[in-house]
Image 1 (cartoon, rainbow, N blue to C red):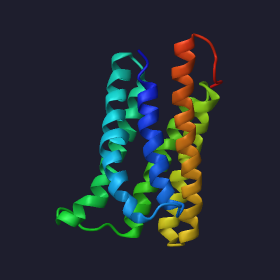
Image 2: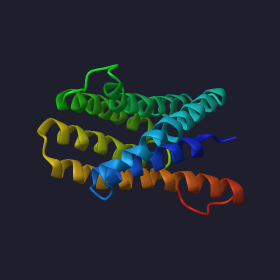
Image 3: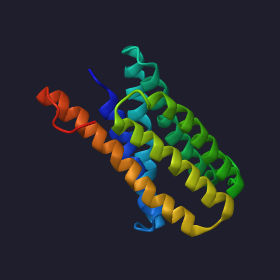
Length: 180
């Protein structure tokens, strides 16, 4: 069993939805949809995929899916905990630092994709770029940077969805239906 499509779909759909807000294509009230997606599909589905990758002996898949699943849980917590008085609202610099740290982690993980499928490289390279753009937007407070990041994030999430569908179709038909 290949758990990667589950993790890629959870990551891809949640990333596309969040970045529709960042790009200004959805209003911020759409967070009411994205936060549950972040908990369950972006978070839980990726953690499950990561644990299944561990069972398969795949260190990269375990680290990537579990880490990004926990990213979504922590991101939701950053947004929600202050409203319950359980944490202070983070400053823009704190959010930027958080995004920068994830960008550095993702850039390092990208190195492990360079011997793998091109489609996986696209997912990780564009995710690295996304984190750095969004961090820059937070550091500078320039909304146009976040909008650019939003469009880049839509592409990034879509590339993960493509890879998931390609893996499913290629396995189902036992031939290359979509190149990876």
